Image 1 (tube, rainbow, N blue to C red):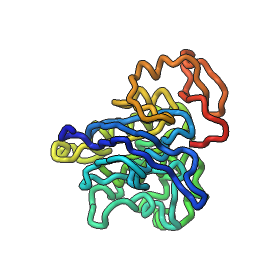
Image 2: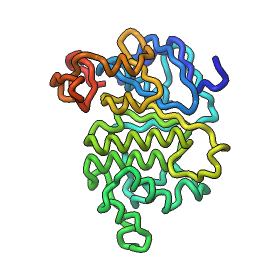
Image 3: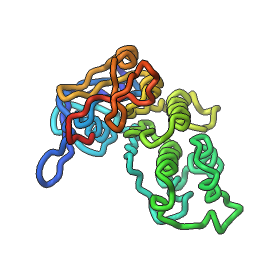
Length: 277
């Protein structure tokens, strides 16, 4: 294994379980490796284990079999498609992943700038204005108040603000329109190339590399990634951008077949009936 490898998995397997046994989406025979400071996209059919692999890489679950190495000094942050918020101020929700002594990552200036970069709406940004104490100090159940799009963007902002070395995001753009999706992938790319989003440029050489791992069903996500891995029921295989982009017919998120050569906004794979991964 090369010294700069971030993750090395050999014949890793795992599943999400409940009291009745493994759920759909068990991962089998996963062998893959990639370097620090890369943007990785996982693609594949629902039910073939993408969600399980993301949780393993994000340290949410322990693999059932095989060997997995991620350097322990690197902080991994797993972001679910269903974000969780606390009954507190928006600022406290956004800086939840920052250390109390971290004055740079969680500064109000950076928090606001990251939200603006992600196109969080002006209506939401009003809750981040410290000069308006009535708005700034509002405590609420933000998951109930924010729209689905704004929940997603605020959740992504919180991840960037936390500034982990490894960012693992499941379906980051699934509810976003094409313009917001393109901007989100641009932000993810910047997070990798600049070793953090909106950080001090003077310290970029001394910062650890940043790695981003996403699942995506959009061509823009495939194009943005440095490496693409296809998760299947028989294993995980690295594939080329060209192979993914040249697939003949695709299926959109609702299961309607479309012609990908006609610039569909969604890449997808024929899912087994009843699957949900």
